[in-house]
Length: 348
Image (cartoon, rainbow, N blue to C red; front, side, top):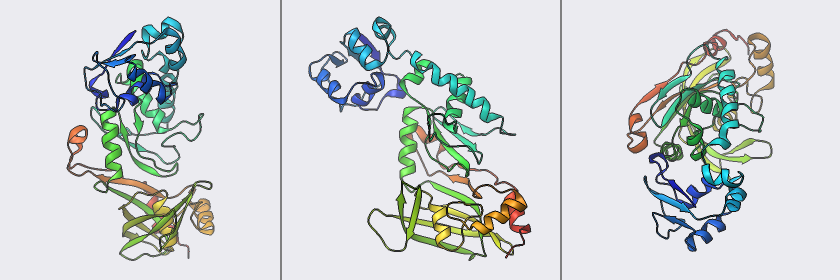
């Protein structure tokens, strides 16, 4: 039998989810059977998988070494003695430290915009993945783990209980602000906030042509997972979701414009698909853009990806895990190349 004590950062999650973090290879049916038979108890009493754990709860697992080995991925009494001590996470954290140092070499400035006990805001450079697409990838998610491990805030034991992660996703070639959760309560709060429409997110981008001073693009986007694209339509179709973008022209050149846009909804490739559908594709965008324009930009300015930056975020009034961010605004400067391209492109 082993006993696990719920920590402050773990409280609030369902008991079955909490148990799964400890025994990741066990099916849900196993937990419910063990709870029903009182082979797993909460504070010495029978519990339900749907209960929410609280700080200080004692979760007792009356399970054999063989069962712990089978579902915990460790061996014999070593598993029973230090289940979830964090040793299973050493390899991942070691790799994350390497990723942290590797990605840091790409920066000439401190990428951390803000940090508190639960949240970290970081400036992602274009060309870096937000999260892994393949096991061998290096992304800002690994940078985050390495950063926290290096700074002493993420031990092997804590990593076994909860994996800090990037909560939003920017395309590889889109730079800008990433939201990272360091604790479980912050992860839940950020995920809920990103689903709502109270968080104001602003982007700047270079687009083809001269745009109206202000405009709104509304329509429906249907995601094609096979080709990783989104199709825009003015009328609803099966599987399509409503999307809305508000934009303002900041500067105009002879053939290009610099826009700032607010995402009212946050759909896959929303800005790229919206601007392309409006006849103003984002410069450098190889998926939705103008190939002729992109070739000219590549030859003249060395542009290799979409000129799109998540440059500003404004938080609403918040409480709980996100209270330190209540009403705050954060912004980063887009690359000087954006205005340089608009002013000096000279194409038609």
